[in-house]
Amino acid sequence: MARAAITCLRFVLALAALAAGWGMQTGPARPAMQSRVAAQGAHLPARPLVKASPLMSDNGGGGPERQKEQKRKGSRLATIDRVKPEKDLERKEKVENEPIWRVLLHNDDVHTFDYVSMAIVKVVKTVSRKKAFKITVEAHMSGIATVTTTWKAMAKQYCTGLQKMGLTSSIAPDPSMSQ
Image (cartoon, rainbow, N blue to C red):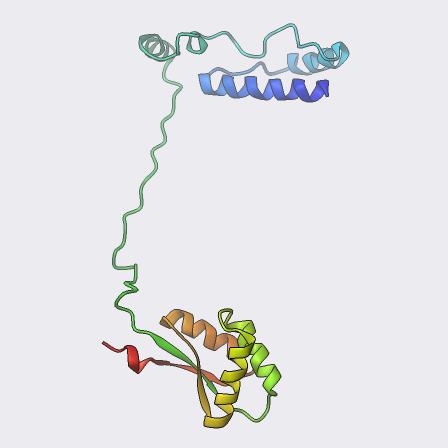
C-alpha cells in the first residue's frame, strides 16, 4: 500500500515537473533514492523530486513573472496547433434527395422456407421472423418479393448479405418514391 502511494506521488510530481517545464533528477542518484525509499517504508524521500520553481508558486503562476522566466531561460513552452480539416460539402451525400431502393428476393427451389426466413432475419436486422416468413411465401408464390426499402448503399449491403447466404437477390430503385 505504501509503495503504491509513493509511486502515485512520484507520478503526480513528475506531471507537475513536466507542466512547469522542469526536469526531474536523473542518473545514479535515482536508484539510490529508490532503495532508500524502500528501506524507509512509508516515509517520503528526504530530497525533493522536483526543483522549486517560481512558476509553481501560489500566486497563479501566470502573468509577468512567467513571461520573464520564459525569456530568461529560453522558451520551454511548446504550442501545438491542430489543423482543422476543411469540410467537404461535395463528399457528403444529401440524404433528402437520394432515391429509395428496394431489396428484392427471387424465388428458388433449393432452399427451405425456414432457411430463407432465417437468412432474411439474420441479414436485415429490422425484419421480424413473422415478416420474413411472409416475404418468403410471397417470393415463392409470385417469383419475387420486396424484403425492405432503404437508401442505395444499405440496399447493396443487404443484397450482398443475402447472396452470401446463398439466396438470389437484387436491388432496384423504388418507383413509388421517384421524384
